[in-house]
Structure formats: structure tokens, C-alpha cells
Length: 87
Image 1 (cartoon, rainbow, N blue to C red):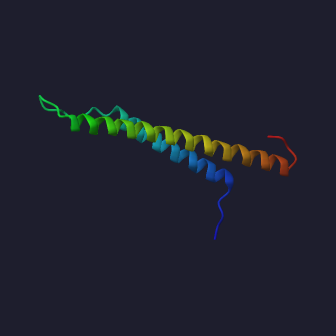
Image 2: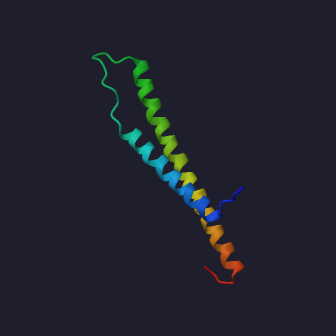
Image 3: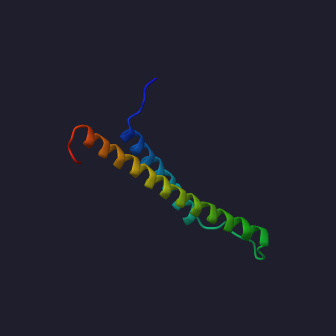
């Protein structure tokens, strides 16, 4: 079994967060489906729910990026301490 380094895990977390944020912003920017002359309340609710879900996903990706950044910073501090060099 191979154990991944903390730095690699942090970078992978940042890449995943970036991918999630990209998808969420695409989903927010999508136009709502073409509605008929008399839009029903259910189609408005679905469109609003989709935008809300996309915004929540964007917020989740932001938190994931913050956590990954903390992992990278902690790894850097630990390596710096181990070799007695402040990074």
C-alpha cells in the first residue's frame, strides 16, 4: 500500500475544488429552460432549486479549497521544522 504525501493530497484537493467550482459556475450561468406563455409555479421552483443547488455547490468547493490550502500549509511548516528551515 502506497501512502500519498500531504502535499500531494492538498494539491489534489485544490484541483478537485477548482473542478467543482468551475462546474458550479457553469450551472449558475446556464439560462433557465424556455418557459411557456403561462409558466407554472413548479417550473419556477425547479429553476430556482437548480440555481440554489449550484450556488451551494460553489460554496462547498470554496470550503474544500480552503481545507486543501490548510493541508499544504501544514505540510510546508512540518517539513520546514523537520529540516530546521522556516519555509
